Image (cartoon, rainbow, N blue to C red; front, side):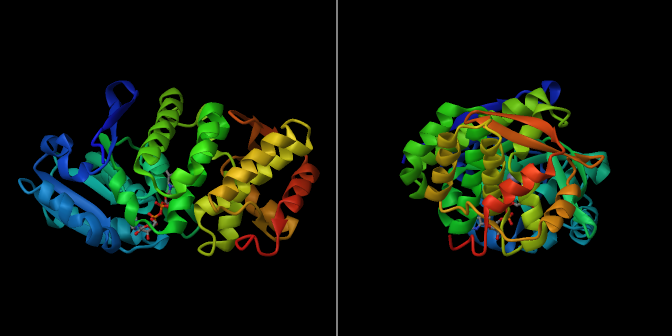
Length: 365
Ligand SMILES: NC(=O)c1ccc[n+]([C@@H]2O[C@H](COP(=O)([O-])OP(=O)(O)OC[C@H]3O[C@@H](n4cnc5c(N)ncnc54)[C@H](O)[C@@H]3O)[C@@H](O)[C@H]2O)c1
Ligand SMILES: [Zn+2]
């Protein structure tokens, strides 16, 4: 295995930070030498059993307290948030400490919000271990917890000081979680990079085999696209919304069918609805829509949404943060490599796209 580490920078002036990507970084990253003495490692029991000791070993000259949260989306809530703060306070952590998130998006979002709010903000480091977290949630500074009234309702934009992506961690990831990350990777190709999409088509078998070299390239290009979008629009005033391709539909599926449907699976079906909507409007070539469908299929992702009444779709979509005064704003792909955010009030067209892309048993295809 090669030991090449690639570094990207998220350019946010005085808050700029590096993303290091490479195999076996947990063993050998120079980042660990630069950390403050007092460290809180937030993780869950699954990830702790796999990688916790490796990180603590690499940090043996530091004072490390580990806080394990439950392994579920439910852990991303107010009670767990309060419990992590209790740990910081009980161990007299001061403002010079740092919070390290070791895990998937659940751990990263929660630990980031803890770091953003403890003593008005302490240093935060992301060590993402799922593919979704490595290409998406660990980059860009969105931190949040859920409220019974909705997902991610409480949060802050709070950038990490660094993101450490150890690609070796992906070897232990369950297949469903792995392909969920691939859905977000396809998203980057569709919204921003046609050549990357073509490369993904060529590398699909290698990526499904978790070939380390192909994976490192896919992660590096995904993070580069996300970093550029975040640098241009940190607080989602404009272009950052493009990262939500397929998500308005996907969130509706998740709201109704989670945990049976995982985020990446719902996004995959959502991307197909968005592409089909554009194709039916004559604004996306049929061959492009088919290429998107074929790539999702190669990655064993669902390309059809589960059946739901249109009234239910409407209700769920209108809860989405991107809805203003009854008009939905969708990210629509107009070509592979190009998407835009558009207000949309033609619900009949949406209905048609949803109906064409729904079936009774989409997960079995
Ligand atoms: N902040 C953002 O910008 C952003 C973006 C997208 C998603 N998210 C959030 O991310 C969360 C989903 O993240 P996720 O998909 O990473 O899910 P997750 O954190 O629940 O992780 C998925 C599963 O994989 C396990 N796991 C993690 N790393 C592993 C490894 N290397 N080997 C074996 N198992 C491992 C976890 O314990 C868990 O069971 C959601 O809460 C979502 O809202 C945030
Ligand atoms: Zn997503």
